[in-house]
Length: 153
Image (cartoon, rainbow, N blue to C red; front, side, top):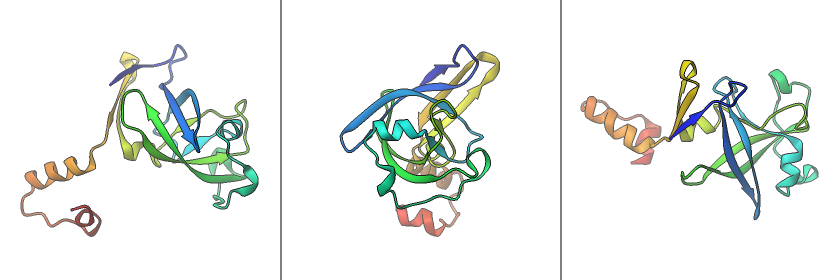
């Protein structure tokens, strides 16, 4: 599916996040340079998350260094694609300090993204890991599957 960059020249997509029956819909920055998905503090509260009951504390680096950050699992709906489970670093940083970010872990493990900066557009498609394994095995029929690949079959 094709998307256009925002007027500011950034790759944003409309995303619906759900947790325990509560949903929010908002733009998210698709950021291949971010190692993780990031959820601003207020967005977590809007989803009914409680800071006090979180148990999986993350070691924060880069922009989040020195900020308390917890791992949370949310259901994400992007466009007409099937919902996926995404892991987010829920941070104490506010919406004024940080955006909702879709990063390498684990947005880019569920979706293939192609940026076309000169054209001001980008494409997102669901990543079909199983199909990609079949294509690779057809290209290399003598190849032995690795242990993680074999577990899927």
